[in-house]
Image (cartoon, rainbow, N blue to C red; front, side, top):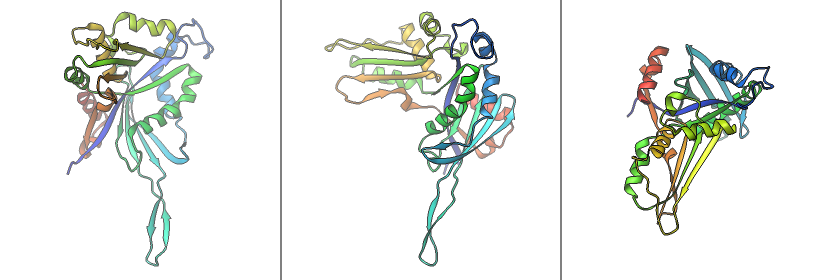
Length: 281
């Protein structure tokens, strides 16, 4: 029996709502000023996470600072249980299964890992969306947009390309407009600039072959390789259509995980942070 707890890995990015105005309506702060303090604003927004409902389910949320730029969030939805009593009756009892999430909140990380526990949430995306919605109000007022995407295994994509060579008819990249230099260095300059120049938060690139042909996808193509590497680091998703197969493949099906033991979870903040970074390198 495994003694490790599984966490799903996400990366979040903080983008200005309007990057093309020299001065905006956000308390006379320019987009450059907003971006330079984005992690500080996000930390403040985390502490405004309200006690919210999700699909009519009450959720208790607590947040704790456990180190510089490092936070622990606990989310516990109300999941009442029905039990049978000794006198043959049924009664409902309170039940609040909780999950934990850790946030590394500095400009070079911006990582979120969420415990996978189906008795609390069917999937970790639900918890990510709760954080997204719970911080949106304050971030909107400041002039920031929060985007969250799972990290996936780059090898999964290239494995599909190799397995279905000459059968890929459609390929779609959806990605967040780059705002983290350390994960977007391989992205083509034109793609980096396009979103910024048009004030886009997300971009989409679709490649289609002629009906009787297929796409030629190769790691030797620097633009494709750059997109794959960038999106795999938690900046988007890739979808493929294979000739002869009805379903579409997508890279978010190969999400990356972090396994933490009970001892590691109770370690110091710096040790936990380094374990997370090492697991996701």
